[in-house]
Length: 190
Image (cartoon, rainbow, N blue to C red; front, side, top):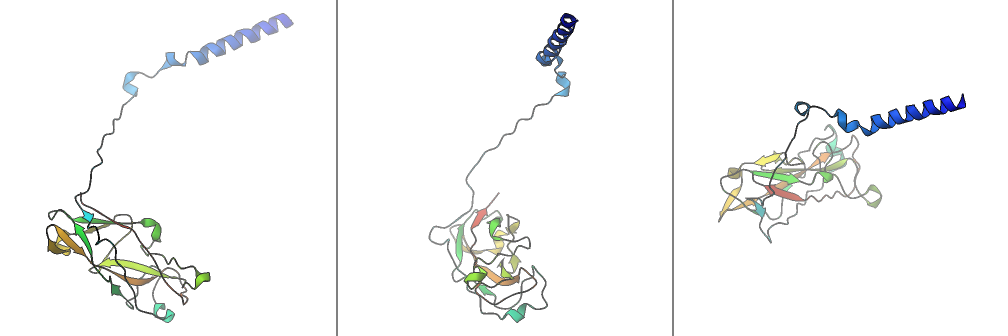
């Protein structure tokens, strides 16, 4: 009896091993498979920041925390707005629109640039900034396209990018303190 049981186990093991080893024999017919080829090319952009003209700053006016009352989270307030101290200069193809990409890590979900001054270090809470070009919101993640005609031409395919900023609420309650934010900008023409 022991001999027959051992023999049955050996036969079952041999059959199972044959099934697993012959998996290639049961391949799908060619019409059930498909092939996808992906191609592309990485190129330079037709638009870039002009060296020496790619850094600027915006200093907003002082605003009391009470100025944010009555405004919803994600909304910018019409107090303390200001333009950049110097315009940035772009060198671009004059026939194509410009896409402005802003580092999305600096933003919350309402396109508000978050305050980088910690509350324990004297930073305000519940407030950040929104970024604009001629009253057009610059959104995060490359959603903002500016028509080339909206940029002031400086000649030689150079264009002025003059940004402005406004305070914006990031939370229901706003406290007093310093507000600071830095963003990286990238320009693209397709």
